[in-house]
Image (cartoon, rainbow, N blue to C red; front, side, top):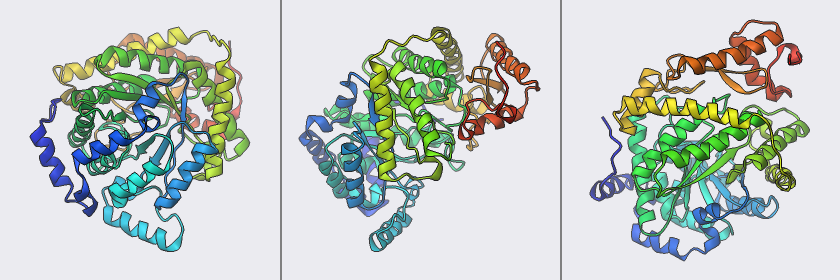
Length: 481
């Protein structure tokens, strides 16, 4: 079974040479030359330095189109008109599935038709030269955002192309994304990605790594999301990564979200080695959005207020057109400005909310229990423990398509809108924690005059898109105090 051990230099070179034969652009990768290119970049394009040196939350959207010139124009617009501090390059779906020939066909069609025939930027097909043209043309740090279970060639080309931040990980880009890859395989693949990032880091080019915090993006209990972040962070640290941005996706209750972000930072500093610089990123609401731009702006504003109170290092913003799919660049920029306006106003205030400390303590208790089960299953080895814990169901993610997850955990909101666990399955949490969740869900059921059931779960999934937080029957029901 795979172990949490650093890939040796000779093995790294061997894997790298094999990968670069998978698509012609891989043949141009030259590590030493790439290091020199990174060293030539100005300070304001060095992702880790900019992120770690900020004194207030930095904003970053999602954005990716197939043609190079359009991607340059899009990112320049989001930087100037949207006032984004950090920029993304979202990768297309064919590349995420390692189908580079189909991505090439889509790119050629896009060039001929002038339309976006891919849903992102095919970085492997653009190759090192295309990546560097993008890096050189945009006056801000840029991150690779994707969703790829096997991101090895993508990492090799984009690192060599000048990107200094890379999203994802072996759990967060497996469990929520795919049925085709087992967890052991994705851990092995991402060990290469992280070791390559570590190799650059050892040469003075600090590659920032960002595990994907929202997971399935649907009512994920904070402790489960934080546990996955810590595990991916530990696996990356073994391979030499020294800049880690741990993510968390908004659930909508301000107390719980602020508590979770504070717990994420605290636990990151507790579990990860001292040599690792830990930062945090808050993803604005990842679930369904209202089909109304005014209401959608309300959801975005709640995310901005939450970020202003919790003060993560980075915020991934959303647009008021989320309900209709890929937003226009104007809508994307508007989402950035809306978030910035709320954060800038709220940062000037001292906002204290009761209940945050208690909620943070509960989240940390739950996370410690989940981390303990991983260490126990692996006899201290994080890779083995992660695989065995998911196999046993003692670690699980709700609504996950992957066969590597039991999918037995069901979340629902309590009477205050905080995400609790309705069905635990074999999740490794003690009876005392289970009783807390059960009591708080029972209070909601009493308020609404109905039994606890899957109907609550289904109602909560749709609630925000319907203009509410809690999926109460017929949209009504005042909370009983």
